[in-house]
Image (cartoon, rainbow, N blue to C red; front, side, top):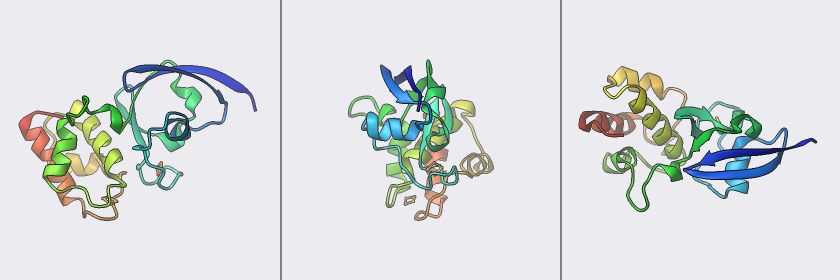
Length: 157
Ligand code: FES
Ligand code: FES
């Protein structure tokens, strides 16, 4: 398999690596970068546990070739906090009890962050629609919606 050199910004830091042409972004993030907040759920684009932000847009890392992010800005859940200070949307998930096993949480948080960037005042329907691809087996979604609503109300993400 052909190898390619790529350079991208991951959570604010420039990264350069040589990868196979068919390497998935999810594997690069988890295995090469050791950032395991991004979860491997279904691996086929159905659960959104692997969501990352690419240029601020929520995307599925299991469906993206790593070569496609050459030159782009990637944010994983580890990149939302500032040192020990959680981003408001992360804190809201804790405050509203929107986490149980936590497997879906990084994807939920990043997708919610992308929503609030696009639409700072989403309705409940907007939130449910935007998060429809993110599957949670535990919470029943109500607390997740409330977490996003609380950030919208406070005008924070
Ligand atoms: Fe990517 Fe499920 S692991 S969508
Ligand atoms: Fe367990 Fe969502 S908290 S899958």
